[in-house]
Image (cartoon, rainbow, N blue to C red):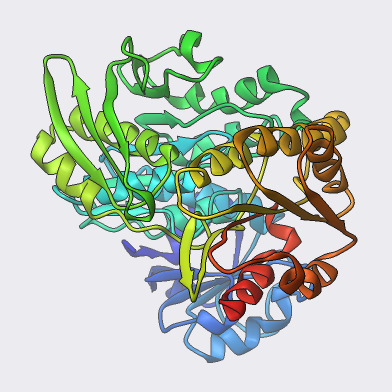
Length: 453
């Protein structure tokens, strides 16, 4: 992180300083809200969380090397440095926005209903073939995570890739005022967070708030195969990517290599190059195309882009393939909505073995939740899935849809009941997709399947 002084912290946040005036010139070299991660030179930011109140740890953090605390409570009983603010969440956003303003580098904001993290990681992999890349770690993509991401920016960074996730109107406006992207990448517009956004048109309106801080000469990189993004006219320059030939960056001769990944030719204008993606699924081709468009816009050569694509590695529980004994397990437990689940099922069908889907609740879908779950079950059977197992109140609809389509399915009240029944339903040689919203904790099912293999 590029250091700043306590005086600059006070100015950026509008907070009230308490402590020895001489300490105002003290350098802050890191920022954390985790008392366990405090290092010498740190600013500790106190949040009142559901399980613990950071204000209770301020004294310990100052004793452990923190040079200052930022909090919502009254100042410390002595003159140890503390900055009091009305809201530490809003103050973190203001500090991150100020810190971002210290850097004149390309900043890529990545959003969309599905594939944000995969696209972000592919972008980082490709851009790192030429640049020193700063990027979002893990899934720090909300109003707490984005400031933490931005505050890690350092003078050595040449380009930044920031994932931006939202669930309601106005959230993207607040994020984009911090990030101020110069390039906006939109992966897809799907049925997600409909409880708050209403429909896909609402999803696009909420995501499009990303352009509020962008200048006309900045760039939007859009999935041109997406029904809504295809006709979307952003207030900036526009590049599209996809499989349809009218896009600016097009994947041709797409070949599925199974668990080894994907191969394709990427054409842009009169140029084309071969790309091998070491992760399976058509969604990976879209991520590679988005990264190719961004890389080319920043002056990268085709050879550099192809090299960056080849170095991609799957992150976390996103389509992570596990070979366990006689089973092939596709663990995709990070999140789920109807579009991402349909894509995961489509990718599953290219792998060998009897196809089994173990699915759970997809959350925040609003009034159409039941119908959307049923449609997923129907789609799985139509795709050729031999067996659908599901757990969760909403996931009962998945089994109902599968049964209506003439497929074989079984519903379980909860995750534990499904795990107990796995030996009865799973056979050697099966290829099993495990997918649900993150709060369903289906990683436990992946672990149980791996023990069976």
